[in-house]
Length: 570
Ligand SMILES: *[C@@H]1O[C@H](CO)[C@@H](O)[C@H](O)[C@H]1NC(C)=O
Ligand SMILES: *[C@@H]1O[C@H](CO)[C@@H](O)[C@H](O)[C@H]1NC(C)=O
Ligand SMILES: *[C@@H]1O[C@H](CO)[C@@H](O)[C@H](O)[C@H]1NC(C)=O
Image 1 (cartoon, rainbow, N blue to C red):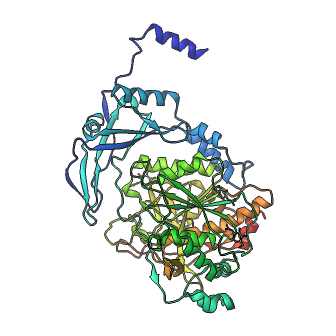
Image 2: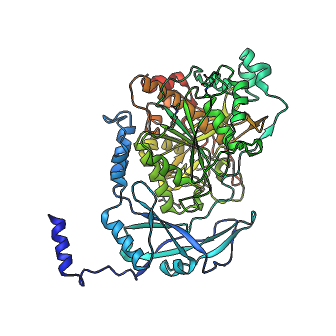
Image 3: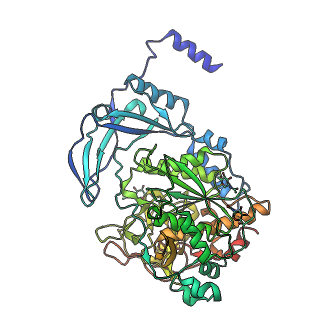
């Protein structure tokens, strides 16, 4: 009724209610300076085509957030009642007015956009630099990363028509810079022979040999992880693969033959490919990170259906390297994996705040649907994704600062475990501290006193949440045995633990764990082994110290499978 009326009024008064004026540009986003390591080289060629992404203001994320917490908090009456794909999309879908205003503005400028996300909140549109410069009152320039020589076209500020404020959330890529060091693969140190064949599996020798090299058997011993196969075919564990890191099947077979002789050596992963992703199988193409992530999920989450999601270079998300594409892909399918592990990330200060919020909201959506999202926290201690002393204040990593995912730090050694010195941890400058961690974090801050005062944001979301083994982890790459270290190891290991718990929950007719943090910081905390020594230095400081209770080095601690089983109600 109402809408018909409105339409007829429109029809009568076409001139008065004609298109809003899109000419009044107002500054929308800016960064104060060029990120460390980049220099402005020249103006961008005016005919260079920019493949831009427009993030529209999403419908009702505040209500979706409330629903996420209701289904993820153990004390809530709605715990475990995860939302369907359609329910989630109904909250995310931009208001009709938003979509039509943005399209009206585009068409007034001779442009047409394509919708690239299931809920319609992301649009893709291409235009030359000359057009983008006037449309957004921006100065697109070529920026060179000095150390790598990598060039990228960005602007330090852009504007949008005032009529679109509250509708157009952000334009990407504009002020977000790539982090050229974000995705350096973990370092692989070859060994002369596999260690476990000689001793560990034969004798199941305890902590001594595991203090030198970590195999699946060590993790089973240390954390009480069962070796019996999972039984539920609907239970899935997703492994993110980026930057042409391929998971090698022959290496997986060799790994299983040596470290899991009790498993069929033809156990493999389900391959999903997006953005023209591939999974090349030449031994030279074997990726250290991809092999680590598949070997330490398939080899630890015994019998769980592991999907390796290979994201190619044909990004739909505009130089986000597939970070958003993989989530949009999982949001687009009905039966997404119940656990997702990702060992990639970057420094928070390289990303625009609006874009970071949008990506974080994508994790919120997947979490509301019942997926546990785990990311490695980073390998630079308090200095971010890579170790450096070249920072005045601590550098939080992304997406660890997002409150809707679970950040995994690393430990070292087995008798007892201590914090790994590279384990990134700290406090976000973008995301406020969520209430689920306020008690744990305020206890930490009280005990910390004035140490490192002024170097971090005490009101930010604190990370990591949990931790697991991250050093001297043995894998096979290109037929060679060797060890790797990094929080990249810890995320797939802890993800495997949650997948095995989910398997038992499904078998018992119970809902899967979904978004983990409200559980971890409440009934789950006592089911973790608190790590109480070690530090994560960086930025010319000793960083933070692990201690009793939560800390920004190892979070709440490492898994104790038997206690977790009880804590989740099995
Ligand atoms: C494993 O998961 C993938 C993706 O959901 C699915 O297509 C495949 O059929 C599953 N495999 C088994 C053996 O259940
Ligand atoms: C693995 O090998 C077993 C026995 O040789 C066979 O029954 C099974 O189908 C194989 N599985 C796969 C995934 O190839
Ligand atoms: C500190 O974090 C809050 C979010 O909790 C943010 O709003 C604020 O801008 C941050 N301060 C700085 C200096 O980054």
